[in-house]
Length: 452
Image (cartoon, rainbow, N blue to C red; front, side):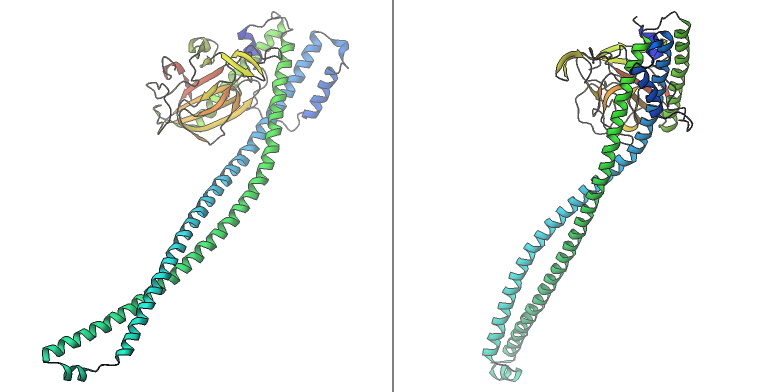
């Protein structure tokens, strides 16, 4: 039985509000839930195949999804500081290595100057030796001898001044030599200081590298665990879809699910709006993109389209989304793309660009609704969110610039139609929201027209 887009989007939001409801310590463990699921999947309870059995299996999968999403949130909380520390240490290593390179360049220059200084000292010493030899050969000349040999008094004064100048010149040579030697000694000291600093920086680099490797080892384990949990929940959602498709749309149970999903979907949207508003900037929404390096079309509000392909269009506009209670727009950009070795005409894999410069405030995954999603605060009260991504390239706290690729468009979370093994690209699109001071506004008024 085919489920309508509206009903499907409502039902797939029926998993409890993960970000708002804390995981109770008394709740069943994931292992306990999976043990019950295994009983169904292994056919141990096949005697009760039918609507009742389907309901029980659906409840188990939903319970499993809740626990997995809690696990994912905990993992992302653990991953965030690890990633931050790795990035900080990596940046510090680069800083130390740059300083080492600068010091080595300075040492090379000092060594060159020292060689020149040694030559200059040697030349000065040779000159001084010649002066001393010449003075010795000439013997001492007294003022009496100068007076007796002078033709007149003026000649005596001239000869005396000449001798004084010679003596002063010799003294200046000695002083110059002393300064040259002093300068050379200072160079030796500077060279030793720089060599010591290089040794210290190299030790710090090695220590940081060792710490990075240790932190990355932990981070890699957490990332593998996170990716496995996300894949598990995506598979879980597919199984829920299959079960839901078997329910009668006119049944009381079906309507009960719809009503519950509507409430929880509204709660999630309200909670997300509140979180973004409380943690975001405020102002009139005017963005400052700073220096950018792109040739994309920019709107009067300073934003670019999040997908920069000629095939991009609004697959669901603001009016249609608002009528369903979700103030947003959807983008599609179908073109031939190779996915796992096969060519599909799809939006899956399209680059997701930062529409304006800003700071990442959310980069997370939620199987029941947004899938992989990113929220960016652009300052002055304006923020944007993209959801159902296949990949996220940024983390909370990252600074992004307008036109930067921050993810890939996909079909994770609550997409319609849901991907299947036969059609893994089904439902691929970009869900896009714009908020001003935490309140959702029409993205169409902020984006370029035409889009690209």
